[in-house]
Image (tube, rainbow, N blue to C red):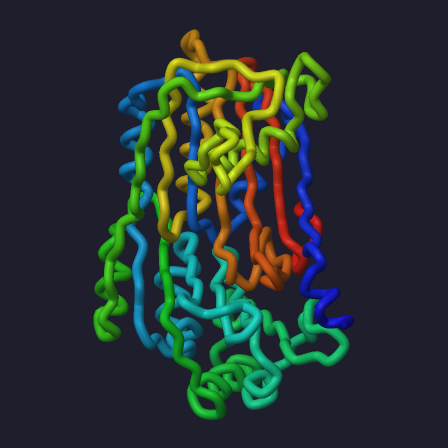
Length: 363
């Protein structure tokens, strides 16, 4: 009975909302984007817009590329050559592909040079590396987190620490994974990663782009200074967050009596816009690119527009070992970690950050 009761329980979800202005010295918008490393989908919604500007189209088309490498030995990521070529000369991102964070061994390379391993108990003990118990293991620790600083590791290749890690990955417990890889360095050639991993059958991929225009879309009425909303005057940030989820899912929001799939409708007060542009980009998306897109959306209101606001939503990979920075991420029943910007025409913004049950509070 206790097990059935737990299955019926709704897992904890946490939504943090704050408001600020892009012109404020202490605005956190750029830091929050840059430290959310593993992004699966980026979507933006622009009311009263039928055709995207050339600047926005160019940014959307320029998100890629990223790479897929099958069966890459983990030892390849700790070699002196790899660290000098990619880790020290730009922002290098790597994430294991098609692994479940609550069942499998997963690995992530952060742009600061930290290699994060989320290992099951048997693998952890076989590697002989030093780590810490996962904070989401429960009463009996069955998962461990290992963090390796590649910058520090490569500073002395003759050190005991480097030899121990190299021995663990090459001899004691050789581990291979399918990886998603991306590298950001201004002015660098994207083909460098292709040539470096050519011996492993590396594949180049471009993000998938979906553009659509929705006519007569009913949108919530928002006021930048009323984060919590006000009856009959403005909707709250929480109400907007729910509504955006329905819009991005292409749900029917008419609340017709014959609709047995969804009875959800736009919160009140609301207004109908003649048309709205919705764009989604899906792939292994770098925060550096998202920062540029956010800046371009801020400049959208440099010229007078009918739209009072636009939104930018970013979803993280459900099975990444971290959410923001080096905060441990788990799955449990959802694995969500995402954020959303509401950008107003006076450069005010709302920032909404959401995580699931197995996550710390967003930063």
